[in-house]
Image (cartoon, rainbow, N blue to C red; front, side):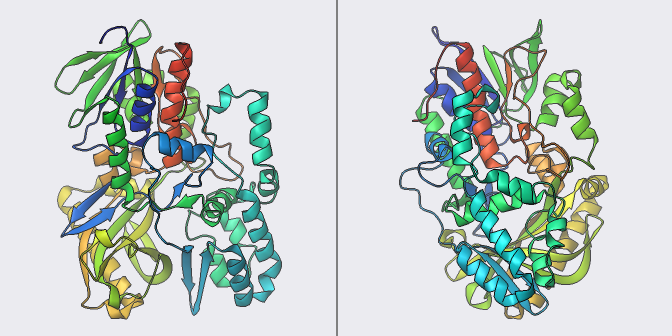
Length: 499
């Protein structure tokens, strides 16, 4: 520890850890981040194969609209800069069902018009849906201070900005996406509303997601996930923070119910005034501190994957000649049945990165296919011997490629396989519990998961993780990092501000 400055050690260099590190430096602390992988980023990651770049994370980034509290957090952490450009995308996604094709456009008027043209009999439900998406556009994640620290004026301000959200919750907060799809008559609309998120998701979450896209608060930063993380790393190190990669932490040192430091994999002891755990929370409980510190709320949610399910995916990436692929954005379509992770799959999605010319050689574009997987499929992949795992992964990639060519025949002879990864990949690389790349799903009739990010029974240990609030994801991660330091700073009678 240097001089009179207090020291924070952060375990995990993902978005939450980097956010905590940057706010820690801005608040005047010495900060070390220990990351187990060769590079920072965690699940917000991209990698290269055969001269192409594969983006693992950002489908859209909530909080891109200037003037919003979350945009200020993204700018403070360096994730977004004043001159950061966004991809020129005009839609959320497209669903194909039979002979019908339907798109959720950024332009809500266009969406409403086309949906009604497709299915006049669904006009009432379509107009209701679009109206409530407009209502949901005012929904913002709290990004200035933790909700449990808000005063009456904070709630008044938040209530004013989200005045229409009670209408959204009344209409869509007690049904899931399967229920919502059941309100429509046309099969293409039924498919549309159960394609993007698992059908078990509470419907209001889907409306908020679409509202982010339609209102301009959910853009895609060019360069993708890895470029965004590298901007955060640059900001952290530019402030004087220390980032140690290839440096796993074995455990948190707890003395007299107080976190005092960490032990690294090379058996070094690093003392600190405060510890922030930015890793997967089951990794934290299971290895870093011990499950004796897991309270009943955590235990009950982890134990009940019926009420609190987790989802991951099998994904495959390809590079294709742009002239041979006439799709754009994300497209869902039916396909011949195949098995992956022990699960029958009859519908998949493909996302084109044609808007990222740097991701592939000239005239080509990266295509990525996502096949949702849940706890049961993770356990299937985990049970396989190495040879069987590799074989089944290769069979999955081949099956996906065949179905892409069936759906888009011009791809025959103009597509090349790049990579395939499974829920077990997320577990191996990120210690992700059951391979989940987001937190607990919020189901209808189930109280959304949320905790404070501070453990009872251990002083000076804070949690900065997407897992502290459902459904997780990047906005929860970046604000969790800020809020962990906010709590530390308040304890030390300091104030943190967005720059």
